[in-house]
Amino acid sequence: MAQKEPQTASTIAPPEVIATPDALRELATRLSHEPRIAVDTEANSLYAYHEHVCLIQISVPGANYLVDPLALDDLSILGPLFNAPDIEKVFHAADYDLIMLRRDFGFTCNALFDTMWAARILGWPRVGLGDILASTFNVHMDKHFQRYNWGKRPLDDRALTYAWMDSYYLLDLREIQKEELVASGRWEEAQETFDYLCQTVHPPPDPHPDDFFWRIKGVHDLHPKEQQVLYRLHLWRDKQARAMDRPTVKVVSNQRLIQLARVQPRNHKELTSAGLTAYQAKRFGNGILKALHSPPLKLPPAPCNHERPPQDVLNRFNALKSWRKTVAACRGVDSDVILPNAVLWELAHRPPRALEQLCDIPGIGPWRQKTYGPDLLRIVKSSG
Image (cartoon, rainbow, N blue to C red; front, side, top):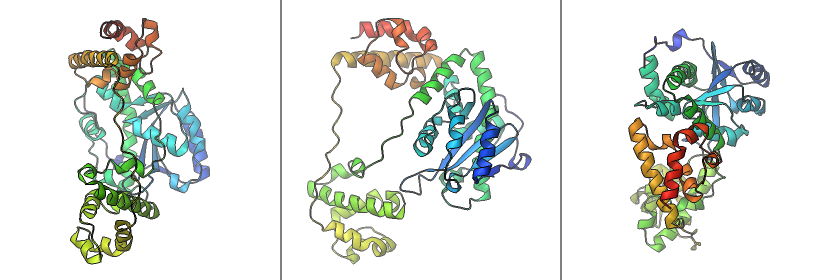
């Protein structure tokens, strides 16, 4: 990759903050005439019980915009832009952004270009945005803001600079990558991958505290009675985190919860001996002691392993996986660049009998059908 002339924040026009309905309407009109827009989002996942999008960065040639969802009641006017097939949306590692935008605002995305996936398809050695910006544009991002609280207001000026720089360089990066994708014969493959990303955006259902109990590290090392105590503490912590709008581990860590379940302190003094800080013992002590010594509750069912697939399905999956590993190694890319696991399982469970049936499987388009189709048919027929 040729390194472009570096630019700094001081040489780029400052962004326009969009925080009023009138400004949002004007922005939507401006963007509707653009052939492509670069987009990024920032959320408050490290600082809230229910994370949500706190900033949407949008860049077009010559202009950067920071849309503030916390100042706006309704962002639906942007929905048609994300859904428009004639306006390309350029993201880096779009999966999480697309899920958040669908969940929080109901946006669906068409016409995607993902610079991280383009880098993976091209076999670039480093695909993180910070690494790519450094090697391509000699721009170095401040990693401090990767853990910034984007839900607070007002936002720090340095944080705002970090935010718009995340989207500003994506359009130039997209041009570099498209040229390389076309030159290497990978453009159709990339488009199929981008389409698949759009098709597979499924926000998870609202979580229930029981969904996370058996994921607590160390829960399986406890005796049944200790697990029962831990469950009561887990429910107390979840309720407290909701009330405080903080991640559960920011109330009391999993490690300390496990220790409490083992020691089962009887008073405030023993709480600190069990590992709580003085602040935690003072603020949460009464609630913790009540949870520790409340009547038993029925534990949620432990997650069971998925039923083992039939042997012929496993044989096909393993054969497909082995073939994929060989193809990926020859190309110098990760295996899932060739085909995702979900596609391999679909092929293993419902093996196609003809080339034209391959395109019925999400993740396989005309390019993959033409390039890998004969091998895929041969493998599923011979390994069942």
